[in-house]
Length: 291
Image 1 (cartoon, rainbow, N blue to C red):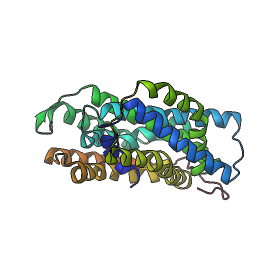
Image 2 (image 1 turned 135 degrees about the vertical axis):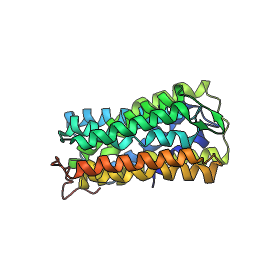
Image 3 (image 1 turned 30 degrees about the vertical axis):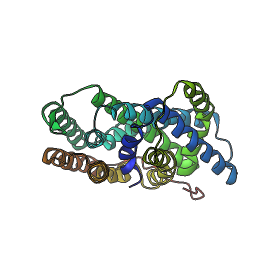
């Protein structure tokens, strides 16, 4: 639910802040809050190898996804972006196989490839906003954002087994905080922001909820229930995003968009379902983990 409003809020934010500005400032604000949290709970420093994985995870979910999705939303609407993001559970599972050693049955791959095929046909042939819109840079940027997020999820979930969900994302944010602060200060003199109440409200949401608090629950859930089973819940995200964008941004809610979103949701559910029924290396949260 927290992540379902991320693209909608981001679409509002890019109206007044450029993609780089959104990326660095959401990371700075979330990183500052994460630092306060880690100090408050007296979290011990992560080991060197753990810190490396947290850093790479952060590059995916703190830098890669926000930057590429913000760039994408400058040329495509949030509903179209949500369709592409519907492949996130499948990509997350693919990275989970490589990083976590989970075995994927043939049924998973069949459903995942079918979802990719449906998505490609939709992007090439359907319309958006009542005008033809073929595959473009915005679609490729959103696909890249989805891949970055999937890699970050897999690594973050692995670290959450030991640290808990809240500390996993918090350490990723804090490890990147020096770089994001420098980037924010360097870009500030050249930035031209058109700030308004909606833009500031959207930035507050994606910084506090999308970049921090949502991950408290998400990483905690992946660590306790495993990527395969908990990942099934993400099939709801694209349709919730499309509905929110239609209600809040008055974006077109076409029959084609709803149909493709439903088809991809079903295929993702099948993929996660077949995987959940196979032997997996389930992620377990430690008994003393707070999230």
